[in-house]
Image 1: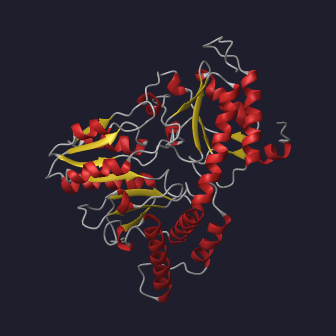
Image 2 (image 1 turned 90 degrees about the vertical axis):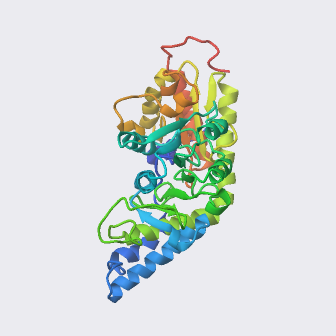
Image 3 (image 1 turned 90 degrees about the horizontal axis):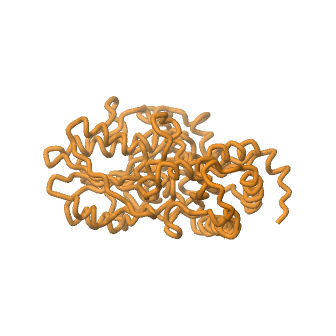
Length: 402
């Protein structure tokens, strides 16, 4: 198909929604009163404060409904990173009299893995669960790893780099049978696929706003009633004494509105994004014999596709930069990992069995609410041109193209 992409490339095509999303105009409008009218401190007793608190509690109730929780089980934080740090560090501290063993998967977000490194220095023992070639956690390894000293298991709901959706309900069942707390990082899945903490059997859940068309700088931690946890931040006693800091009312309101919109539009949006993803897969499979998917081919987030080309893994960064020059934004994996200069291979791709070269060569396309079918067609057209201009330094395989 011949694509007229001149106008599209003038404004740019953004296909990196797994890194962050633009803020929906409807969300922006919901936040305005919190900046200009209801701007009081929610802890103040005067009417400016009580109005702000009412706005905050209404937003908390909205978030709670979106995940099937009770309103007093949702605690606002500054980010998914803070929520993950809080969950692991504070559960460890509060329950270390029971044991010092924690279990996480090998493909967790860097904030989980780096927190585990810190906990190891503090005297805790961490088991890292392997995953299969699709990125699915090894359930047998989990059963073998849990012991009487295990206090927490943390496995993400869906992986940020490869999009694989984990068997959360099976993991939670094993944790419940062994009286072990279960935490899940749902920053990538929340708002895209159903998340219900009761049905999924989750004790602690991390979510955030900027992956669902809400503002940056706001997240939440769900803590099931009765979970033994202590504060990570100490101060004025906000968030029922568990998370001190003056609440960011505009961001909280925007977070709730973004979550509400995602829940309302989820079924239609998931179907639309799955269609766009599969259209991209079909074209790439038909045109390039060297094309392969990273992660589970079916049990993955609707608009998420991680893929590579055999023989071109070493050219991925150049490929991404050439696409960027054309106004098309995709990524090589996690945006956060690009800040780590100590390595340039993906721990996630290595965990699913790729060698160090292959683990540098993924292209992540993550579509979102504002991605159109024409965007995908322009991307395909542009990718063809870029691939034709590249000469692999690792392979002269004449079967690169189908």
